[in-house]
Length: 189
Image 1 (cartoon, rainbow, N blue to C red):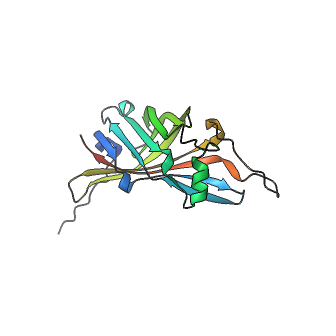
Image 2: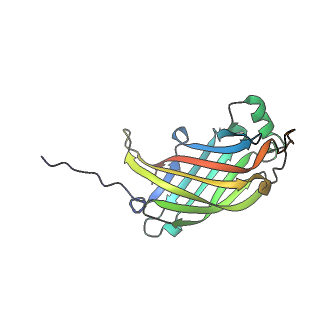
Image 3: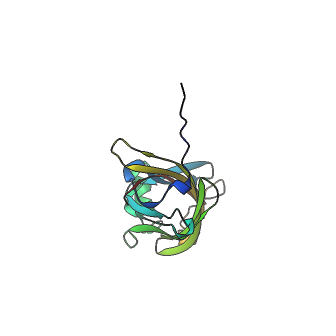
């Protein structure tokens, strides 16, 4: 009896337009709290899409729009503070956006997305390395692709400078924020 082995898909197998499946995707962050621990959170409302160009990955593109009000750290008081003018200023800047300016394949299953990240009305260029986790057809006939990536930003670069000094030295909220992306996307074209 012969056993067939599936060949894992690579980035070269992707081509077309994909929409982020928000129900199976996490866009999160990690921030240092009180100099001794980390707070993890996520955004529960977002949408995005990407176009993968198999022939020329540099012509690929992606964009994501996050609703700032959907921030969730599992603490209502903290979330309300994060939505305020001290942090995200969501009344004036209800959305956080990322739009690629370049895509570069860095390995058989890895790529870097460089783009403009806009938070609180401030836009900076960042590069996010991603690992392609695979692709498969789900029970509903949808081709799904999975990616994971992360990048570290300085919140001060986005005008988010609020903090509180601690009696023991240091500050309540660290400057460096790790953005985390666990993406499931469905091919639409």
